[in-house]
Length: 412
Figure 1 (cartoon, one colour):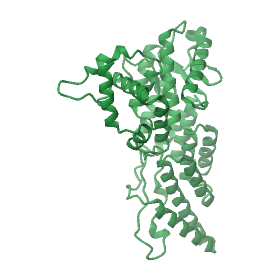
Figure 2: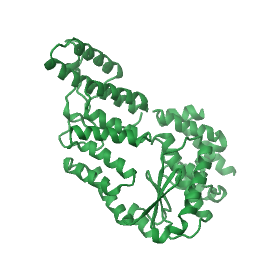
Figure 3: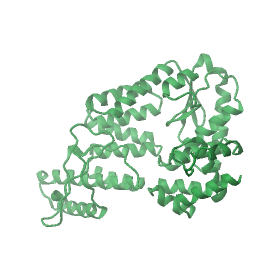
Figure 4: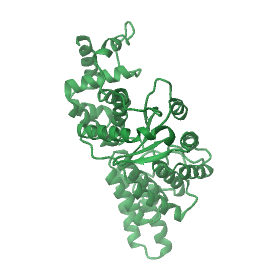
C-alpha cells in the first residue's frame, strides 16, 4: 500500500458512520483527516475503516438521499455522500488504483458538484497521470467556487511550475502559504522556487518532440540543437528498453556547476538530478561528450522509472538501474563493494551506496532478467508492498537474492 501524498484535510466536514448508518447498524468511526502538511485546524487522524464499511455507508446514504423530499434534508445528505465517496477514493488511491479512485471522486462530484476536496485530490491524480490540462481544469473549478482554497492554489502552482511558468507558480504557492502558514512543505517549496528563479531568470526555451530545454541563451545557444538531438535519441532508445509509452514533454535545465549546486543543494559529487525535471550542470559545454551522454541516460532512466512506477520505485532500484543503463563497467566496482562490509559484518544494501545499488541491480538483471525487474516496478505501481512485489516478480525473498548477490560478487 502506498502513502497518499496529496490529501486535503476533511476539516470542512465531520463524516462519521453515526451519521451515515441506521440506528444500531454498528460502531461509529470518525473520518480520517491525514495530510502531508495539515492545516492547524485539521482534526487528528482517526482509526481507518474498511472498504466494506464505507460501501455500506455509501449505500445507506444514497438511499436516504433518494427518499429525502425537501432541500433542507437533501443538502446535508448530499454533502455526507460526497465525503464518503472521497474516503473511498482515497482507499483506491492508496492501493494504486488510480482509475477507480477517479471514478469515486467523480461520484463525490455528482453528489456535490463543487466538492473542494474531490476536485483537488482528483486534480493531483490527473497531474501525476500526465494530464496537466485536466488537472488545471479541476483546480480552476475549485478556485472559482472558493478563491481562498489553499490546496487548490498549491495544485495550480504545481501545474504552472511543471509548465515552467515559475513566477506564476510562486504567486500561487505564496498565496497558499498565507492560508496555511504552518505548512513547512510549502515554505520549502517556495524557498526552492526562489532559488530556481534567481538562476533561471533570463533563461530561454527550446522545444523538441519530447523535451523543453531551458538554458542561458548567451552561454548555451551553440549547443542546444546538439543536446536536444542527444536527448531525443537516448529517450527513444530507453523507451524501447523499458517498453514505456511516450512521456509528456520533459523539462531539462542547464546550469553551470555553481548554479546547479546552489539551486539543488547537492554536493560536488552529484553530476545530475531528476526531481520531476532533469537538471544538468553542463552549462557552457560546446559538445556532447561520452560522459555527458552517460549522465543524460542516467537521469532519463530516473524519469522513465518514475513514470512507470508512479512514484513507488525504491531508491536502490532507481539508482541501481540508472547506473546499469549508463552503462557502467561492473568489474570496476566489484572489489570496492566487497570491501564495504566491515569485518564480521554481512554485506547488505543498507546503508545505501551507489556501488552496492549498481551491483545488486546488475545481479538481479543477470540472474532473473530485466523483464522481471520491470514486472517488479509494475507490481509496486499497482499498490503491492515491496516485499510482496519482490516475491512475486523474482520468486524469491529479498534475503535470498541478497545472499545470491554476495556469492555472485565473490565469483566475478
